[in-house]
Length: 379
Image 1 (cartoon, rainbow, N blue to C red):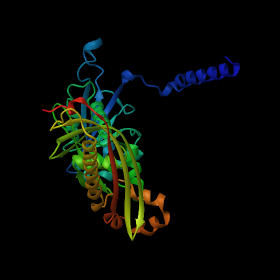
Image 2 (tube, helix red, strand yellow):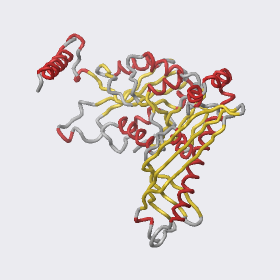
Image 3 (spheres, helix red, strand yellow):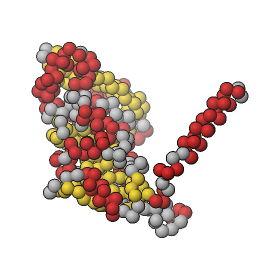
Image 4 (cartoon, rainbow, N blue to C red):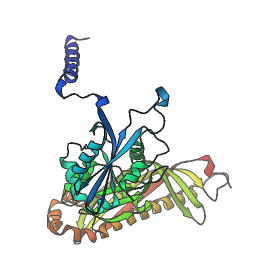
């Protein structure tokens, strides 16, 4: 080994030692902290309530027994029109100082999301308890109900909900939005916020659409198919199932294995046109009216056309639901500015009116790359 390389390794090791041995006066033991895993924020009658899910490190048992079932506890506090005051109230109720460095998710209750979004964004911007990578969502009901869900007795329910949104975005049924993403959308001149909506249940939390905003107001909640279309146009869909149907084939089930999305906004004939090109590779999983022996080239062509049409319909539905509500969660304004700065400047002062009349020019090419055996046989 060269001497210079040895010196570099030694210096790196020394830096690590200094990092972990310095600032003894500010170090705190884990046993003296309450480790936060999730935060729920609700609003009613000028009162903000915050529910904190934290690790219950005092759970009885040892070894595997101590790491089975839910190892968290929920603590609730209140403050008048103030998240920080509610968090402070929670801190007083906990026996230990809360540590937010592990927090995985912030859940806004629907009432809070509709009435107090500005104050929550100010909290995310300024609070020392905020993290840029924490995931944000909206509860269809109260946020505290989401954190109260057992998530099938998961060790950390808040983590299970975060995982649900992460995998859900890749399959097009949800969105995975960090607090940093949220703030970037909010501070951009034309772009608008979108956030996943979840529905709490006793045993588990389920995805319930995507809320789209115009400014700081929720203007609509996208359906499952509209959510899929939005995520597809944003290039987020990486896998998942897509159902379509026809009189000949009945129900068709296909698995997405690869996607490629190109988008750009242009200004044509006094209107904004959003151009989208989608390529999708699929595996055919199921045909209700099973085809005996083999699928012909003509059948494959028809199925490709049906799936392409389904994706196109979902994207169109999402696009016009957003634009007609003057919501630019697709960041069309940002795209137009990059493509044609002069055109963007000419419409930016009256952006939302132009957005509401925008048109979608979409081309989808779905191609079957594989046919699973269960789609070949008759039923």
